[in-house]
Length: 177
Image (cartoon, rainbow, N blue to C red; front, side, top):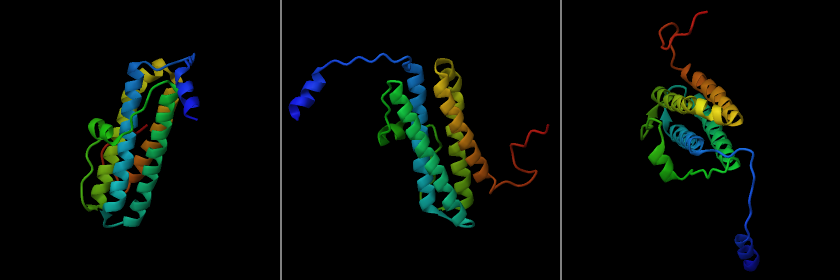
């Protein structure tokens, strides 16, 4: 078996993809992967350490955010591989490169946890929006993935943030048509 593995490594294989990501797209997708991974980590940190009013509802809602972040991180990493980019989802890379605000340590009151996790969800959305035009110009197919991520994460942010909103007194205000 070692002979087969050694022989396989010695053989040269050349692929001819129709599209291969450039450094800009690769860097953008890496940043999105890091932010999504950190969101999943923060969501679990919140899930384990929240206390206070509406605990159970928020506890379950955080799992929705975590599940979405993990699934989207996997989608982004697999898209990177399809574009001949090697994703780095190591804890060291996430800690060094995340653009999300830090989540509080220790027990966190449910309202404070909502504010913190919504800020982090919107930070991921900010990354996706910031990189969108470059990605779309290079590869509209990958931009479609960004659309899917934005649609779901912005929905989850709205659903989570609604717990803290006050009618007519919360910002930003709705656009009136």
